[in-house]
Image 1: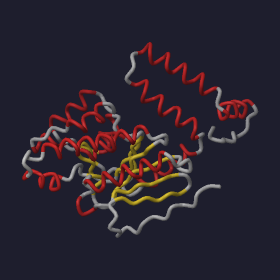
Image 2: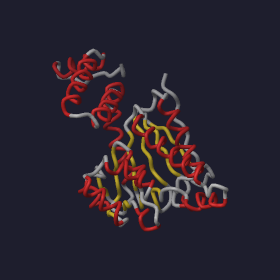
Image 3: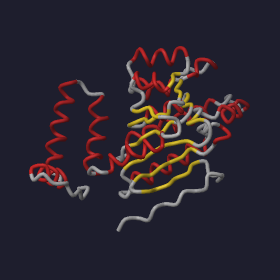
Image 4: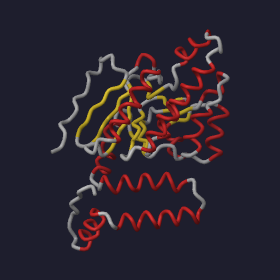
Amino acid sequence: MSKPARAPLPAQSSAVLLREDKDGIATLTLNRPEARNALSEALLAALIGEFDAIAQDRAVRAVIIAGNGPAFSAGHDLKEMTAHRNEPDRGRAYFAALFEKCAGMMQQVMHLPQPVIASVHGAATAAGCQLAASCDLVVASEAARFATPGVQIGLFCSSPMVALSRKVASNHAMEMLLTGEMIPAKRAYEMGLVNRVVATGREREEATKLAHAITAKSAYVQKIGKEAFYRQRDMNLMDAYKYGAKVMAENMMARDAEEGILAFIEKREPKWEDR
């Protein structure tokens, strides 16, 4: 029996992260609009908790990450960080722990068995850009903008660099990192950071449409494919092909592969059982 849809919290809720489940899609909405959805300690903890839960939830077949207010996310909460400058070590231990926690959260996105789509309606900067780049797919409105502007305040975006440099060509990543300049959605699409650009206000609708295209497939096969994609990406060509062939051979033993191939031969729609 499928789980009942998880009711969304009202938009005015004080919760820093909202979640709504519908039709196998979990939508997580960053909800610090007054702070441009800066990734505070509380918001990071909420994201980590939800990702842990979603990873174990077979009813969730795709995830959308969105934001309330004018921005998708402005990155780390600089005011919260600056408050630790008065500590004996000038905040060194706190900063190290914070960036490690954030890096772990970004890796959770990659390691989730479900595909993750970023729905970007406004500015995604610094760690906000990192979050979008960490997602498997990005849908952006024409009003969306992307930047790694740390260099402008003396803090090079070294952590966002990791996700960005794995999403776009190195020369594009370096230009963003060295100049800190805003990149409009159309340019981000040309660079490969964004999958689709849509009219302002239609980004969530398009992200949901894309999610439905994903949920129509076998969740088990999607899980196999997503894990294999990221594992082979950093291998050399020979090892990647060996690994890919091994994964395909194992995938052929899955019930859904047998069903899908038979359905194709018989010219009918497959009936997935996610195994």
